[in-house]
Amino acid sequence: MSIDTATAAKVAKLARIKVDEDDLPALAQEFNAILGFIEQLNELDVDGIDPMVSVTPMRLKRREDVVTDGDQQARILSNAPDAREGFFAVPKVVE
Amino acid sequence: MSDLNKLTIAGARDALRKGDVTSVELTEACLAAIDGADALGAVVHKTPEIALDRARAADARIKSGDAPAMCGIPLGIKDLFCTEGVPSQAASKILEGFRPEYESTVSGLLRDAGAVMLGKLNMDEFAMGSSNETSVYGNAVNPWRAGNSDAALTPGGSSGGSASAVAADLCLAATGTDTGGSIRQPAAFTGIVGLKPTYGRCSRWGIVAFASSLDQAGPMTKTVRDAAIMGQAMMGHDPKDSTSADLPVPDFEAMLTGDIKGQVIGIPKEYRMDGMPDEIEALWAKGREMLQDAGAVLRDISLPHTKYALPAYYVIAPAEASSNLARYDGVRFGYRAKLDQGDGITEMYEKTRAEGFGAEVKRRVMVGTYVLSAGFYDAYYNRARKVRALIKRDFDQVFEGGVDAILTPATPSAAFELGQTHQDPVEMYLNDVFTVTVNLAGLPGISVPVGLDGRGLPLGLQLIGKPWDEGGLLNTAYALEQAAGFVDKPVKWW
Image 1 (tube, rainbow over the protein chains, first blue to last red):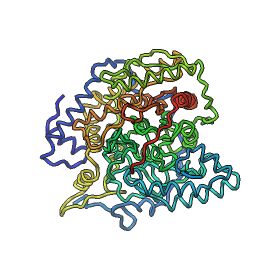
Image 2 (cartoon, helix red, strand yellow; image 1 turned 180 degrees about the vertical axis):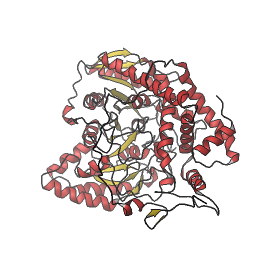
Image 3 (cartoon, rainbow over the protein chains, first blue to last red; image 1 turned 45 degrees about the vertical axis):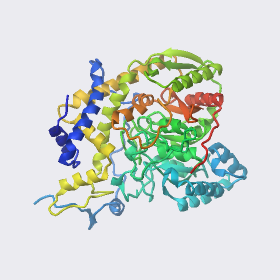
Image 4 (cartoon, rainbow over the protein chains, first blue to last red; image 1 turned 180 degrees about the horizontal axis):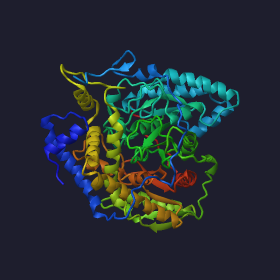
């Protein structure tokens, strides 16, 4: 499986990371090196093997479905790059 | 008392309780050592005021006679831990200016036990790296140097700042995190002890997430006893982490008898790698001999899927990272790129992430995005998870066969030079070849300094334990430490 620049561009888009056109060939090459390394996994027969989900069989804890938190608007917004009138502010989303 | 920053946790605890020293004195000694060690790049956010406030509170608590073991002990905290009101950036530009409104569970447990935070420690960006060269703060430097060379060496990574700070006596101990070897490899490179507990022992809550099914916090200390004391203080069930184990944490220090008579130590043949340096092979042989002399029984074992651990890791870890790091969108915290006229929200995301993440982080996020994308999910991600199950089964079978712990090298080499940037990212990944299996299987592992190589650089061995058997593992490590008698320290040049 070889990755071309179009695939590299698509992956960058999916990851929401801007990559300049000029940098795509190098990126594709890096992907190929890493994926080439990963290809070894195909040597193994994994039929009938369940994917690992936990270290020791353990049921995930459940908690009561109740409100335990809240009223922290100022603290939640305190690290926002742009917060106005109690909201996170972002560039216009809808025309 | 002089050189208070050179004390161990156990030594300081005993001196504090006897009234021979105060936490303020210990803390001042460490703060002075930190101020004189900027060349190491280990401490990236100094918090002297917080440190002295906590030291004074600890002294009062010790006087009142109600002090846990960690009370008054000055520590460094890896930048990956969220610490209330104190910059917590995971060594990334994308978290520039982020001051958490909360404290991670693990650093909170240490704080509540009376431990003193001296500052935040350098690391690879988002814990992705094995040389501490991907940090936005610049490199952390190993206090050790090879022979008469003045070349700067890596302290390893990702917990490179933690390793450097402990080895250089800037703090009594430090927190680290380990996703593929990030506690054990830097510990081995700097001649200290690093414990990665069983997955689920330490809460992950409030630790900046890299690969959630692999990440585990642990102590980085000067001795095995200190790892027992500090590790115990860091562990325990946390309802805020759904994978946190609801199991009692034993008194690890009380389990350090040094008696390992009859313990079965497995020696996995697959860890004898082609091209492994003779010095690593010799060190491993020395370790086997030491454990045997201490009464352990050596047994040759096979972990047949070992060679698939790194490729499986480099599917699973990037996949989880791409998901975890999706939260860095320039909206809720950290860095946002400057936008051009007409830029919309997509451009904001793309520019913010392009400018905020470093090259290695971008590479891994995109590899993760690729292996999770439609059409490849089964071929890569699910296959890797199945291989992970096979790797875990290898260990399960060995432990079911009566093996108590496994002895391996910790790293394939001693610390290497900084700046030898590896063109090939895969080459850097090979640093984790002996440690990554342990994360995939969720097991506890510990790196113990055992000797020096021909150039005078420390080398470590790794012991791998059964799930939840940190107590037994620490005791075996203690026996190895006693036999090795490693007392060397780096010669101060900084």
